Image 1: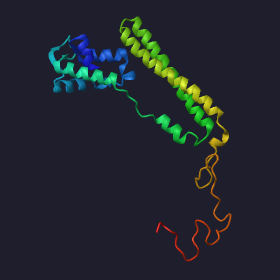
Image 2 (image 1 turned 180 degrees about the vertical axis):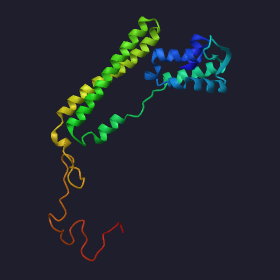
Image 3 (image 1 turned 90 degrees about the vertical axis):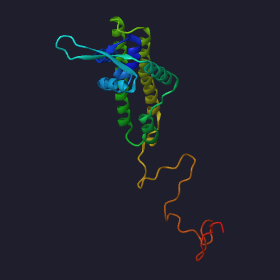
Image 4 (image 1 turned 135 degrees about the vertical axis):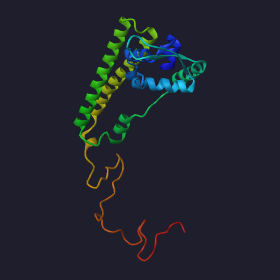
Length: 224
């Protein structure tokens, strides 16, 4: 974000870059740590990606260092941009893990309530992104490219909302036995079509010499 801003807008001091980050709300949808911008600038200067060109001071305000992007910084920006655009990023999915491995371990209504609350938060987020985008366009703070990038975030949130609606129908159609607690001892029910093992002692001991049970005094055959 810093290198792109300097490449596009020319020389800037840290406060100007931070202001752009705050106006575009990039900390929310882009994962940029706005509070770490000044530290990042100093780190980039040490790496030769940006250079301090002068110091400005207006009245009694603190002195501000003005930076510009270097040739090395432009090379780095090109590599970062290509990587961000061409590499697909699929992060961890704790929701998917929870539903896949523990979705039915509990009360159906409790699970549905949690998912409804999550859906509501996503719907609110989509509406907030939409409102921010329209406000920034109206004030002339962003152009068509930036507005379309924000629209992407809005569409992603809306897609999550639609998925929640689909999953709610699936959840509501599952039979109650899918949410039944496991038997005492934690033994799960056998899959459909399978055969459950008889409880210990229910059928008595197998006769001597029966398949799978060696006669008294003999050891099982282990492939000898």
